[in-house]
View 1 (cartoon, rainbow, N blue to C red):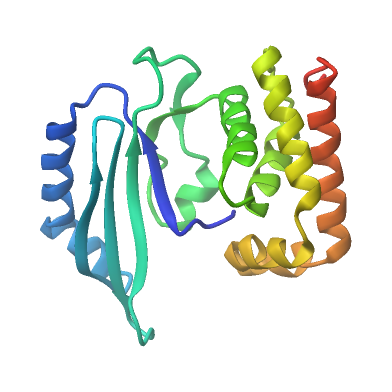
View 2: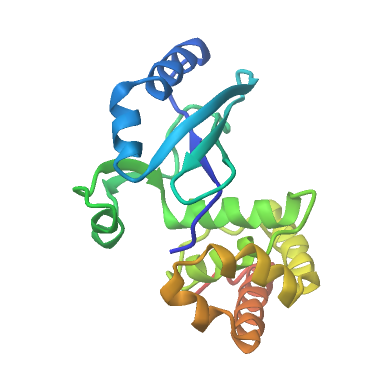
Length: 216
């Protein structure tokens, strides 16, 4: 599992004002405070960031036992494209992930493998600063053989993504990915040869899309 500093969610049917009220209530709730306290964590400060019809963001500072300073994170909700639910599936969270936190696997809406792959290709192509974590995520997604619909837009994004993937260095990968892996996997993924092979697989898959071969 690769941990993230932030939580990014997509909104389908909840209006901006309604979501804002619910988030304010949730972040101030006793139940959340109790769950965090059980892990030695407390919310030190909440700041409402961007609040538009497209993006809503909350910045949260956490204090944790054994940590001298605060840990900064954010929760962001996005409304991407038409409110159709296209590319979204409904199912349980992987049991191994849920059990690590001592909870029953919740049922959630989530992106299909194909939709997640397409969004991650877009992210790698369009970010202001190229991120090695996108290559790591794409390697996992491509391994699941997503049934991609290859169109001209996806081919163009795959071309840009391949170019940016090649530009990434091992040091960027170590700082952006390895540091956020579970400790049991850090030794394996820290190897430079592992990064080189991962990047080559992702670039090869992107080149296949550019040739209109998808991931088949």
